[in-house]
Length: 88
Image 1 (spheres, one colour):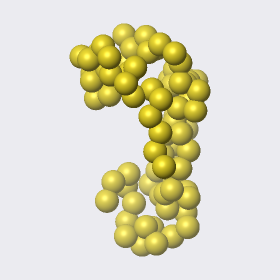
Image 2 (cartoon, rainbow, N blue to C red):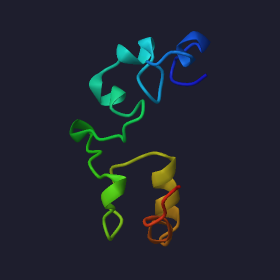
Image 3 (cartoon, one colour):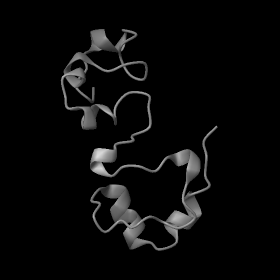
Image 4 (tube, helix red, strand yellow):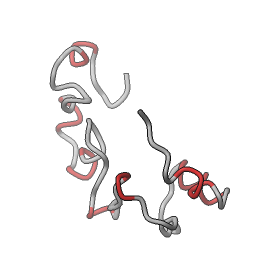
C-alpha cells in the first residue's frame, strides 16, 4: 500500500480519505497538506491554486518539477484541453 499505511489502518476511519496514517501524521505539515481527502494547498511551497477555480491560462511552471508539469510543458495545448474537465 502507498503513503505508509498498513492493512489494519486501511480498515480504520483515520485512514485516507478520511484521515492520515500514523506514519504520515508524523511528517511535516507541508507534506501532510497533500495527503488524505483534501486538495493540496500549501503557501509555503507555492501550491496555491485550487481545481475549483482554474486560471484561464496555465500558471508559470518554470519552478515546478513533477510528471504533470513535464507533460504540460511538452504539450502546449494540454492545459487548455484539461482545465475544464471534471469527474462525476
